[in-house]
Length: 460
Image (cartoon, rainbow, N blue to C red):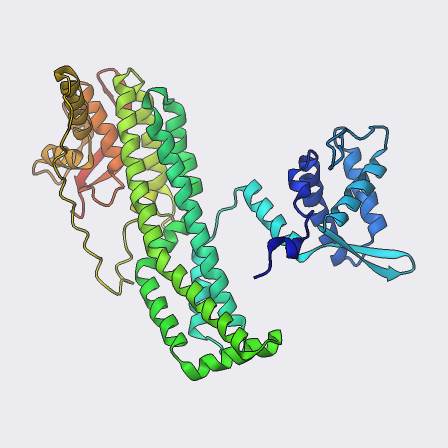
């Protein structure tokens, strides 16, 4: 396998690490847009590109350039045209840009192929682009249905899209872990406003967007992956047709049979490794999301006990539930990500037995006061978990088909906290109740909020 630097050249990464890196990145992104537009109008000319970059620099704040080798400041007496020429020449020297002579003294300018790959990555990071998880799987399904052995396209498309799917899911898993780590660091330092903003806005919008949820529910990924795996094994077990694929690679790349055969075999291994990785990554994502939701409830309870505003929390969460309930049916709540589309389900959902906890043995003496305080904290969290909330709601309904929360006798902070937990947990798959908001305003113990109606899940 070739070294990365054999492809890019030794100095390719200099613009990303030099003292001028911000100027270089800004210039690279600007030139990419300019060069592509000029190609479309058939006006790509290096001199014209220098002129356009000069005008761009004229509209920017004055920039200071530094020598990439010594980090010394370059004399700032040069005009912006000289700076534009210098930046373009340096990007050519570092193998980002390449020029082609057209005759009559004219030259076109374009980015190298590997430069476009890095520009795409830079733009994705800057724009916080959301991967389209569903598109990768759909492309794979289409290619596998009409797999072509006599050309390389199908094999490469399947391989590339499995890589993209796995990378996208791993990135999502990493982001959720970051959110979970942040909320578990020190709940005493949590700002309630920021916590609710993140939970009801940023977290849902950026990390549980429609694309991931459609992958889970509409595309029914848990059932589709075994089908794709069966189809791939069927394709690769067809020896005669696989020989056609080896020949196609040998003819296209002008290599011998052994090298072509090794490439096809390695690609098969890559595809199988990626398809087997997807279920475990998704399981990890789902598990971490459920922990994050549960931890959010725990932190909100702690902040309330510390004296935070119950009314403000109720209003924020009522707005959140309202937004989830009032939008069109194409939206799927982040809490419902473990549901399946039962019409499309091809096999029963796998049963996951609950783990049986082992007794923890302590090899040191614990102070009685510390022990009691620890048990008290554990009991406090246990009071508001999903199982306690389910029991609370079913006891509250007590034979009623539906019942307004305003009927609840609110005699302490405990009931207010339960109302908040009921709203947050109402969208979890293991909630045994459903919640419907009302427009009626209620005042209880000095706290004003919109009333809501509870009923057992599935009861008409």
